[in-house]
Length: 336
View 1 (tube, rainbow, N blue to C red):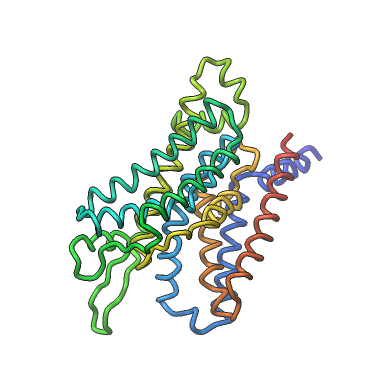
View 2: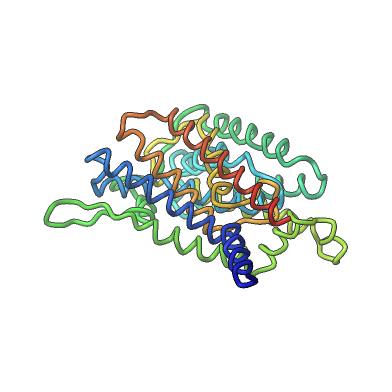
């Protein structure tokens, strides 16, 4: 009898575990992919895989970054418009000021770090609500991108232009007997980043203190830790990855249009939450965030193949997000 009870407790504990949640998300990714694969012959082409990878780079980078503020119990709504703003500034420096690609990429990332630092200082030092702070930053970035470029679209080097090599970070084209074959090289770097940042989150003070801030900030203060410093760092990480996402976005799309970007942050935040990051803070996983991004990316790529537009993607993603939050709340209530 005791053995049966122990077995039931063990099974119940596994169901509530993060590993089980990741397996469920992975199963959902496979199921969704197989549905599109069976429904549309066009979806089965190799180019679809390349498209999924290309469209997930900037989303994954944003999602990795925002996982840290979310774990502290905050958020970062400035990522979407920030991504467009930083890309536009990089384009402006290259096209108008004649900068080479390396300095422009560096400024693009540093702009993200600067906005992230300001967000973090206001949230951690002044203790203003993250929603209001990052919403203000979102509006600021949207306005700054339009003002600096005078509402003109921007482009980064492409084709045979000097500096166009940066696009090969994410995709290379091989010449084969059948023609030119694109290879999504960026997925290799994305997987490496996921592994590195999962290690940072689980095995360094950066991650442990972020989790502690989201779990019990007052207890962390009483232990003598400089909470403000580590809280600000979570937003700096978000800004840094948004800067990287801006470069990935510029490498993926030919034109960068002022005024875009609003809503991108919701996909990134939604991916992290679907991946198991708690809305209330205190827990999360970069691997889970990666799986959440993969699920949303497959949905984005597959829905047009079965005749559904972007509105359906929003509807389905919203339902998945609601389900993920409900399951997360149930899991945490049972643990309590």
